[in-house]
Image 1 (spheres, helix red, strand yellow):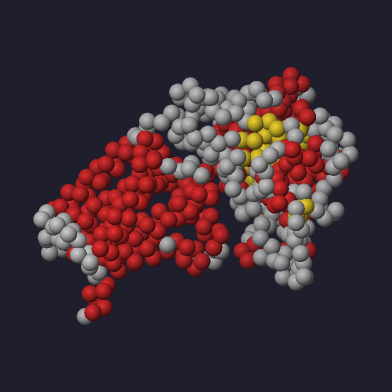
Image 2 (image 1 turned 180 degrees about the horizontal axis):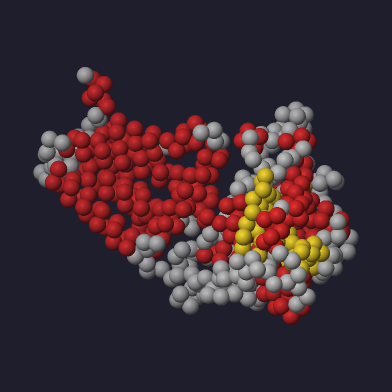
Length: 545
């Protein structure tokens, strides 16, 4: 029948492969995920695949060569055989699937990866090249040794196969030396000290469900409405002091699951702090907002109604966690005779959590928290609230506050102007009295493409399951030194506190020195900018409308 002939055509196989390659998007929608969440999940899967393939560096190039040669031999041997048509259908299908995956990768690479992912395009290119060679060599007409010209009917096939061949080389060649292990390697993770993963204390975590008021829950949207909301508490084990400080971490948009930041929480608690991670809503229901509402952006803030349920939920979660610490028998048993001294406070956030931090730290200061020692750490900042009740009052910042505001050069998720206005609020204490420059550092983490893996300062350095070399250089050592500082202050260890402070606040400190590539080339250092509002090349339009 005619439809069977159409179905058996390699063109149809390629089309089916293209659809199959993009089925991840359809599956995500069928499981109730939004397009944005599905794209994000696929992006993370691709990044994890890249990290897996990194373990095969050196061997990966050899395996690729073997696969290409083997595919060519199979194509030659199968030519003219009865089942060659099935081989052509299969290879066309593989080409279709891989074309979709390659297009997805190129989309993410231009907007998110920025050249950091090199193993995945190499693997995709090898698959494409193998399939197109095997398909061509098994094709009777295309592989005739005595052919002298191309017929009009063959032109579309030859053009399409040549295009796939070119694409495969574009994916393979720029990454060949990297996957062959010929590029300089970045500095290794420290063997001891900050960023090494060796902590003064082992950490035990607890998760407890929290109930929220109707004023908060009425804003929940979709999956947020049925979620069992929790707070997560990380405790240092066998803590040898009567008092310990408090750490609060506020997650980014969509980063509600603590697994996204478990390395951060272990770093904070492992240095001797009780660390709290409150889950709070990312998506909210805007149905109660007036139709004529106009979103206004102003100097790093907005009047987004979503700030209200997010911020108040985060604060209620923190309070619930503190209540659990005082009443939960398992937590009490783990802490032993240690009590939390809230006058020693570390508080920080990532992306959306930065805006939340302004509100929460203001409430904390009103309660007297952090009045002995205070560290604020803001990573890849997103917007804060402009509403007077939610904006936070930075004039409350004590004279001893130590602050890092950290921008990432390769961040394509948030506008660069936001963190610069946040720095202005903190350094001027909301235009009241100015904190000294050495207390409020605006830091830019730079990209460095000198070797493999390249160090790309993306928006996602804080996410645990894509933890990369640059995070081990520019993020974890800093927050561990910050936590050590608060812990030392809580235990009345001024010498330890001074050492920890210098490690993360001074440009030559132990926690901020970037090291060298394996060939001796220095890694691009962290930039310390004293007046970020005066910097050139920043798009300021995103911070005003």
